Image 1 (cartoon, rainbow, N blue to C red):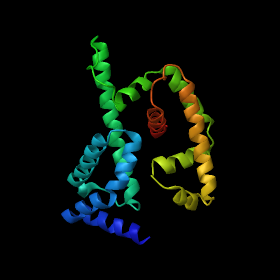
Image 2 (image 1 turned 90 degrees about the vertical axis):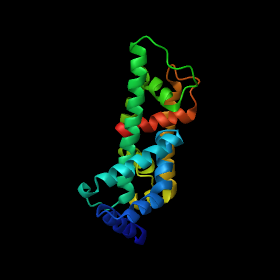
Image 3 (image 1 turned 60 degrees about the vertical axis):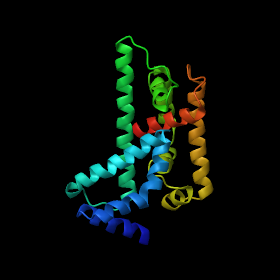
Image 4 (image 1 turned 45 degrees about the horizontal axis):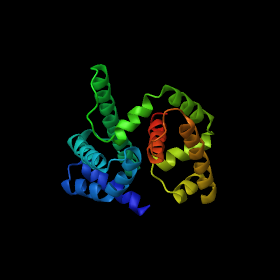
Length: 207
């Protein structure tokens, strides 16, 4: 509780234009933001740049920022939007090359390129959306808490008032269902399982 209150105080000082508070926000939340961002995009350089951009943009608009009860959650949400924007930019670049009848630069496919490849697999998207609809509300709730609020199993158990083991089992079962759909779908052979899981998270963000 003390840590949460400390973050709220830092956020208030940040909104008031305290430059030390900007540095404090960076130091207090960098690791959590980095860990979370790396689940969305498996490119640490993009994540690092995005974290910096998010904090600087918030600083520029600090006077218009709202009061928040959960600073970490607010920053995670803001970073998520920034990373989604990066993926969309990459998607547009891919589309531009395709429409122009050009080949993409000859280099090893990046995480973003593989995500775009998966996005253009319509059969896969349909199967995955059906799988998401088949998940229980509890499964979707726990996936959201785990991957988008970056809570650990113990924190989720406390919030949902269930055992830590139950949390683990529910999340494991939900991810296994989604991964099975992806791995069995056409034209995804050769794509690392890590990338497939990243795509699941990408879809969940928008679901």
